[in-house]
Amino acid sequence: MRIEKTVLVRHVLTEDYREKLLKKISTEKERLNTEMGQLRFQYQKQLKEQSGRNKSAIDSKYNTEINKRGQRIESLNFRESKVKTLPTGSLVTGEKVQRYTDVQVGDRWSEHRLEDEIIIEDDIVREIRSKGEDEDDSVRH
Image (cartoon, rainbow, N blue to C red):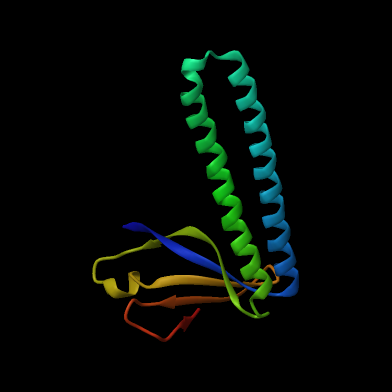
């Protein structure tokens, strides 16, 4: 039987990766600011077109969307400050990917429950770790 497992991808923070992260954060913040501007414009336009009784529904709709983006920008600002202050060599959690593993009758289930982690440095896989829930030691592949 084949089962799906989640693998955590972590990056070693180098100066190049730090710049890449900061650029990605900056781009995302610019996109969100643009969306907020567009929402404000659409809000003003709809207010002019609608009668007074629909004003509260319009307010609620647009303020909710604008606030979501504002909160996301605050979150990105916090992340940006963390990336700037983390020491070089720190592990930064990237994404999660899925992998498949085969389970056979007679296998030890505890081995299939190991959490896998891939360590990337400068876009090169440096290490693959498997760690059990109760174990502190990492197993290298």
